[in-house]
Image (tube, rainbow, N blue to C red; front, side, top):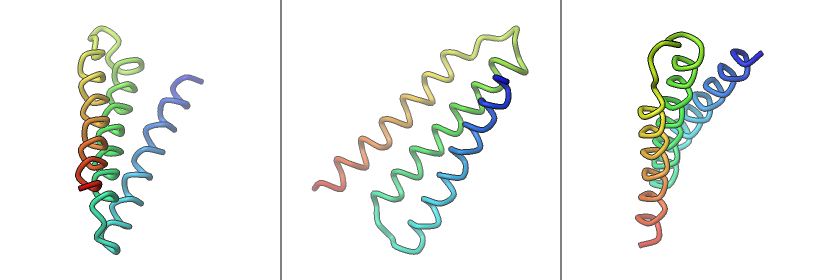
Length: 85
């Protein structure tokens, strides 16, 4: 059951990334771009979670998952600050 949930979370982030990127190409809004980059990093985070918990059980990828999550938050924060200016 956990494998299904982890996989669906990764798939959801990938779909959100694709939709935001497509909206950015059509609209050109910088906030859409930074939101898409945030979801790209969250997708990487979720793929690393699947690898960590299901595929590579001997290797601890917690640090890499935290780095990806931090990058996602920083990308969105940068986009929000830059859009405010």
